[in-house]
Length: 210
Image 1 (cartoon, one colour):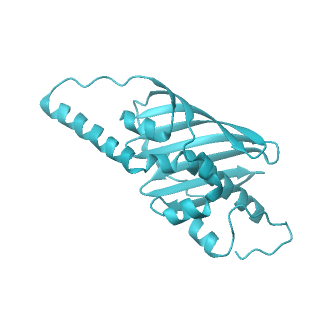
Image 2: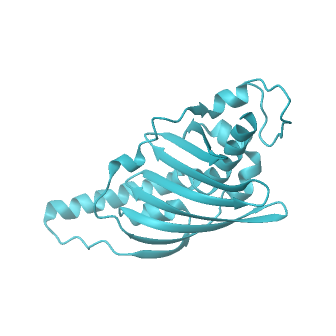
């Protein structure tokens, strides 16, 4: 089980690389606020607001937030991990400053991993289904000490672009952005404070400090 927790943290680092940093960078959030203010102003003046349109292209999640629409998307990304290129396919839901994404990650070493990410209320949740068991981690989005220093191996993914194909999400389901109640989310800070270093592979019979 401990080995699987480590795998989830590695997956979290990858997802954070092309999700968290882009979404919560200052320019992205500022642009989103400007878009929302402009839309509110148009509504007050009675001017016609352009109907939501499908969008497709390549960019970070910040690109999707900057569109200023509620979107449901299919996403694809190729992640270089040493000598292996991993193809990640998934879906994403975007509404206001909230994001939900679900991925199927195929790895020659770990097989198929189903992983999900939610950013809501200032907290990032990541959980993965590995060998029929579900493991989760969480962290505050303002906790840059962990995201930058501990996840140092994800740096090459910080500017990772995803290919996206999105449709307007006309009937927003807010429950999509609620983390599952039946999953125990381990705080990333607590894991690292317990003595585990990111990228360390422990043998099955080794005693870990948590």
